[in-house]
Image (cartoon, rainbow, N blue to C red; front, top):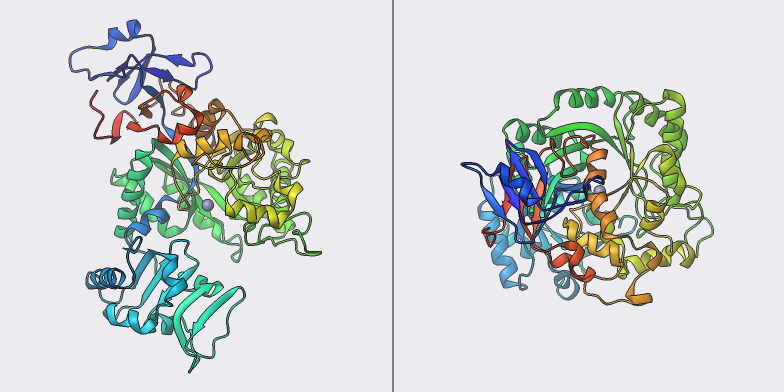
Length: 540
Ligand SMILES: [Zn+2]
């Protein structure tokens, strides 16, 4: 395969731009001028005239949950349906296809249904064909259950409302009416059995197709439970994976070091070709929005509320020391500045205890970082994993700023400061949330304005000093992600000898209006030289 006449951005500092790339047996064999590339056009070569379009290394999403996201597509889709006729008809149709004993699980129900109408369990009983039924809203914070599901969840008249949750009740009898909110709905999620292995693999196929469509060729799956590990490994062995996947196995703080045995076994067994499980995920805190992020100073308006960490610093030090000693890469969920500090302290402790080695740990989310801790990422060699999609003002961000107060609010998602500190910055979508699209996230990070271009402040940007450049974001999404996955010799840039993990875009990102980056189209995605996505309109 020979690409010619393109705007080839290599993310290789020695040769940042080229116009031709030749690929043979899945590897890049030439990067340079059209004249030099011509020598590679032999019999049977597919020559692709890019006509000035852009060629980039495939994108790396360093924190996402594709299998969980894909699982949503297997559920009964409620989004956009009119209440009540369309909603009920759709539920009845979904229920009719279910196997005996399985749950009717609907997602994406319009929030407005819950505002005006208060759907009742009896109504759901009529269309759910005897299956326990659990239907959730777009944001997942409210759920509608039928009588059987309420029984299985153990929610009866005498069940009190949980903390930060509501059980809607019939006014006359006090019996649960069917709608649960907040903390009340959360416990139902844990009841639903995980999909079986075949379903998980189907979910993975659906999610991978979406990722490939966004130009993504590598992901870090940020929360791999053993069931997910098994599905990934099986998909890999069957040759189904169209992504390189580094799995971060989920550590459970309620279990001791015994769980390490299973983790090491799963690392040992899953060694590719495309799936590895050599990272471990630790959830240190929650998030700012729900006041569950762990802070160094109290939330605004409170004297004492520091949020909470799921582990104390001494235990975390001991766990990270052990994981580090085993050569596992530690991947920590840290939102608040205290959680960030705990994470850095634990890694510093592990370095002191275990001595020098090539560790590549990462801290993800890092919404709020104390200024004293910012330089420590570079110093300790810790990758800073941001979600660039969060870097603009919206109602959620405003609520976070209110929770932290103005000074700390201004320091949220300090991507430019992190780049300036010399740390290795990587980027992740955290999809199942809003979107997995790297181009969409890149637009947000370089502008810090809402996607529609609205917004207040200097040029509409939120904290304009924290805007980053397109080149920095491309680095985060390619070579830095590859480094984090220990694959920088294999992928992450367009260089001779590397795998042909490539993406073709319909325009040169460096020439489009920064507020239109999200509108740039992915035309073709190659993984090891094989097309894993092709836009129907792309006929070179
Ligand atoms: Zn996540």
